Length: 333
Image (cartoon, rainbow, N blue to C red; front, side, top):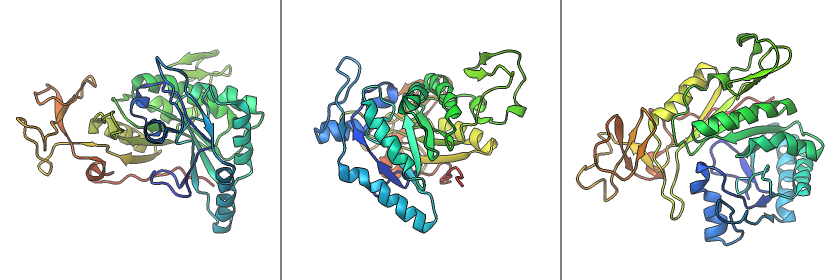
């Protein structure tokens, strides 16, 4: 847990503890739950209809690893990205407050590392950082967005956390389960490009300060990815237009865009043929209706307005989007 990671948008992963509770559709196919609960039996995952689950703090030896990473980063003259809590959530309500204090103390002691704190609970960021009592300067805050509901709720909470002065804000749209629509309100960070309003109010989920200026920092890094199979949970396909929508908007605003993976599914092409009578190698295509986001999985019948998707596996589907690999990372001094 882990000197290196296969996650394309980070250099290392660090887990101060393991265990979490499912809180959104993105959690349905949680790889951490499948690994830590189903396969290893290490903790019990929480979720609707069950308990809040259990949490287990990792070893002292594991907690010493970032100190070594920080020393090496200083010697190398670089600032590697550390994805914190790939098997948990830093801002989980069930985590003891002193664990979070210890984590922030470690983060502050490793200034050569860029700590990526990705959460499905962005509404907790400000209050929990205030409870810690200090804010390290080498933290970036991010939130998971899988559909329009989470885009509206989570991004509004994420930009509020900009008041804590993180290095940057980022959004992980993985697994992407629907079209996110217009994201421009979250991609424009310059207040001079935004409409002047009177008084203090909210507009489209964005707080307008007492001085009349929109309090909107840009969410400067956008990550997309499709879903993969996790045990009994089978991956849901992502329409490629949903990826393209985020890519095109991010690039138009001059923001960093990173496409992690296509997932298990890919649009049927001449290279990847399918048989509507039998499916593809026993795995029938899914049709996704682009206009309303309706997903027709495992259905060989024609879906009006949709496109055929075939399941070829994560390795074969790859990371390219329209023949291009998007590996952009935000710039950090």
